[in-house]
Length: 115
Image (cartoon, rainbow, N blue to C red; front, top):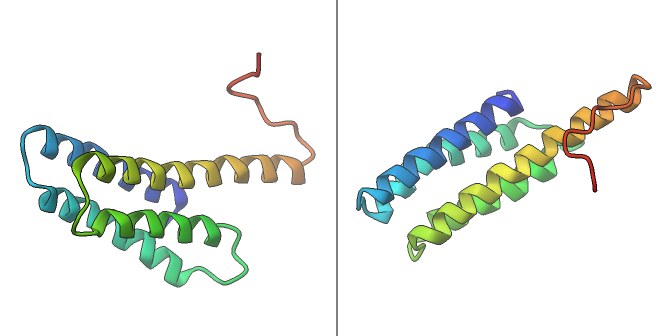
């Protein structure tokens, strides 16, 4: 699964979990919704070679997902952990753009200029 697809799946899970919790759904339902993303992260991690540059990010994202699965998770911490897992994958994607640009001897566009 491509990194962008994995991030999109995480974002879809975040929206669905937030909606479920906002409508008074139980935490368990949120955990079940998020589990699809978690399983995709675990599958990607299982199939990534040891030397793959995205492996470390997948391990961190997987750890965040394991926290979501904890039985004592409250709604706020569940959403926070899901956001953090997605952020790790987003950061990996941004690093990949910089790495590709460097290998092509191109200066990447700075989307958020520092002030």
